[in-house]
Image 1 (cartoon, rainbow, N blue to C red):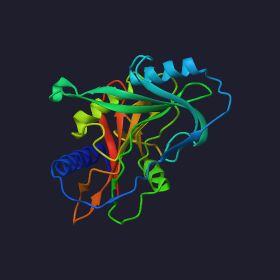
Image 2 (image 1 turned 60 degrees about the vertical axis):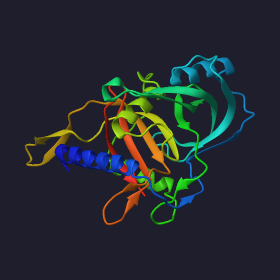
Image 3 (image 1 turned 45 degrees about the horizontal axis):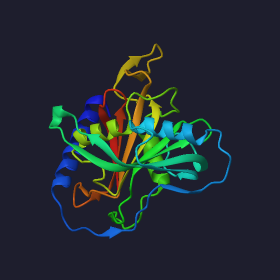
Length: 268
């Protein structure tokens, strides 16, 4: 599929999402199936508690004095597209009432939500951030929870070329949530749970065809490697597709520093 086809697909998905968000209906719900879990850790971290708190607060754009709960944990993120996060030593900080602002160019607005951010206890690098999980998620169309393996396979097929970041981001997590609010029309916390991750990315499209001397044609990406946020909204809202089918998960790339949303994909 060429770049024009990807643009049409993105517009179609966005329109379907907006329509589904505006049309509330009674749907079956299930227990949450978050990819994030953790247990308390007694390991000796390389990053001290004070430094960890400052780093976590910086990723959220708040002061370290903001009301919070900080703990050292063994973190598991079963859908992380870059790192293998299995019982990884991490600092986890939950901040209450973090303000997310929707850009004025799309109508403005603001909301306060609790946000949790996780950093590596070895070097204070960003691992993920997430909203509180709702007690009930919308049931998938098949009744079977979407597996982390299925999500990672979809990310691989999307050919986003995600790699570990090589430097700090320009946006904070609330910046990302504000941009996604303006692009997708859904305020933070509107689904079962929202998870934000960070990576360097080189998407396959847009691209220009290069004709080789041997007669082959290669699509060469037009965009250089760039920092991007991967936004995952899980457990709803119900997004109606064709012939009665629907999705309950969505995954989008949001460019760091510009806020451009897309490409993305939906999952059951």
